[in-house]
Amino acid sequence: MADQQYFKSSVQISRPFLTSKAVKFLQKKTIPDYQTYKQRISHVLSFLLSLTRLLKFPSRTLESAMLYYQRYYLFNHFSTSSNIDVAIAALFIASKNEDTIKKLRDIIAIANPLRNAPNTNEAIEENKKVILNFEKKMLETISFDFRTYHIDELLIRIAKDLKLSVDLTYLAYMIAFDSFQTEVSLKTPQHATAIACIIIAAKFREENSVFPLNSAKYKCDRALVNEALFEILELYINNYNYGSLADMYPNDKESFIKIRINIKNEINLKDLDERSLLNDGFYNIKNYNVSDTGSARYMLGNQEKRFYEEVDAQENYKESTEPKKVKLH
Amino acid sequence: MSDIAANYTKEKKVGEGTYAVVYLGKQVKTKKLIAVKEIKTGMFKDGLDMSAIREVKYLLELRHENIISLLDVYSSENGNLNLVLEFLPCDLEVLIKDKNIVFQQADVKSWMLMILRGVHHCHRNYILHRDLKPNNLLISPTGEIKIADFGLARSLGSPGENLTANVVTIWYRAPELLFGSRHYTSSVDVWSVGIIFAELMLRTPYLPGTSDAEQLEVTFRALGTPTEKNWPNVSKLPWYNSLKIYPPPTRNELKNRFIAASGSALDLMISLTQLDPAKRCSCEEALQTVYFTEFPRPTKPKDLPKKSS
Ligand SMILES: Nc1ncnc2c1ncn2[C@@H]1O[C@H](COP(=O)(O)OP(=O)(O)O)[C@@H](O)[C@H]1O
Image (cartoon, rainbow over all chains, first blue to last red; front, side, top):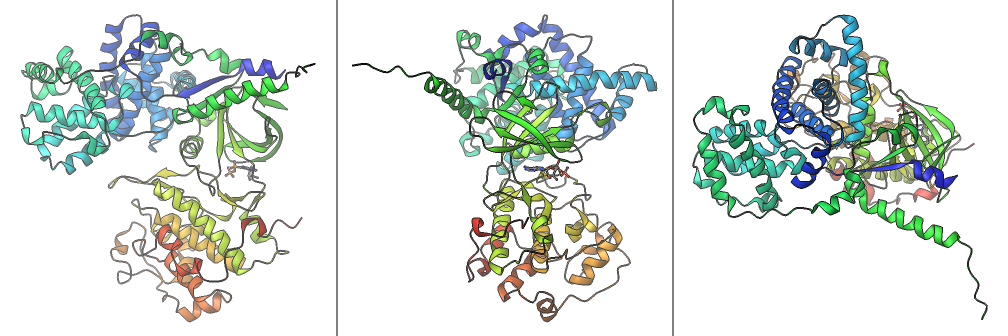
């Protein structure tokens, strides 16, 4: 009996950040056409931005929503027929978590005209069911991990500490906004991203007094900053028009290519090899059947040690309940 | 009887809150009693309740002997979220109301010490509880106070961020909240602790208003009406208007109200219940007052009064 239940339950450990390779590995399974996915993400960001403005949500709610949206598609199949519903579910969860809650009905009623969907009572009720269903799946995907940190809050504090001009801080802030459509939030913690935004802004404006920038002062590993730098520069180099800098500086794409070439040499990114990914259950596509028929347990990454201790204890427990063989001589 | 995985059993229902049903159970391996809080969800609830989100978010990160432990988070067969908590069979409100029990000054000191330590731990992690009251202060079988119910908690806002003033049960609600302030700090919890301190000494609620308007009246009758003189800029708060002006109580009046309180106990209560939040002490300052070092020593938790029946 006990054994049966043991097999039925699954454990979900929340790992807030993944390596680039792990992200690619997961997306290969869930996203059939990556180019479409990228186009959609840019569209989702502008859709959620409009929605956020109409609902008067702060930018931190938008930031969390973009994170949940991307995290969802690491473990669930991507399809263009439902990705806007998933985006609304992400914004809804973010609004709860960021203390800016609105009724789901009201969010849908404002979203429908933006997506050219009918806005009748029945349509809203129908859509509500769909979105609540996505909410449930998304909560499981994020392992009920509601810890949030925000790039812009950290960015402004670090900018103040570095005594950056208002102008430069604003540019860094715009870059931070553009970063919401990159995968940086899946990979590096927010203080590393904030520092990367400042570095890109300062290099772009050639404000060299900012350098050398000691990221260790902000308890931030240089390698993480580099990771974030690459991720964000990739957006400007490959999809300049998706970013908001394109409006302000339509002809400056080249500068970003130069910035990347200049920092490329310093960098040596470490990554996991594929074999360790294949052997780790964390990287499996989400199977809701486990939590439908059995039960699923959610732990934060910092409890991982405790989990393995429990597993060890369980093994020892099994051993100790085996009948002991008595030696006869 | 149903089981959440092999680790815990869920036995009888012991209570029902606004957004959850609470069951008694056991940790299978240790036979330790636990409480399982099953969160109600569904269409009419607009998905997962925000209180549940807050409870999971803050309790998973806070670990302190005076804060309830969230042992595990599960989703069960029916898809509901289950929070596995340590089992805490009693709360401070039950003891305050139990007239068969006599509170010694050392007992009150012991409870205050544990409450302040727990709240201090929240505050040093930039978390505001926002609903401190005797029935959210649970008591373990060994007498320890455990702060529970983080359904209204939030992290300290950044400057300029608007917070809702509609928090804290009104009897324990700080004056800045009664005036509708949208920018407040951990001092709202400190106020609640001060009012709980008074209640522990009086054995009856100190400021039992019956409505928001009456709460202002009751609060200021007891502690004086704030004015620009003792609280600069108070008149700019949204709901500050046409107040009846009561003088602040003299020390003698307070002494007569709290007959058994020592001089330093009174000093502490006065610092905890300063009308101007900027003048109110922090938990850290409160913990360092002479009240906690002078005699009598705080009672050991295991020797504290227990439920009589
Ligand atoms: N950890 C616990 N141990 C024992 N009983 C508990 C525990 N937590 C809650 N309860 C019981 O369940 C009831 C409802 O709890 P809760 O949902 O937290 O209440 P509310 O929504 O009113 O804050 C409480 O009044 C209490 O009797």
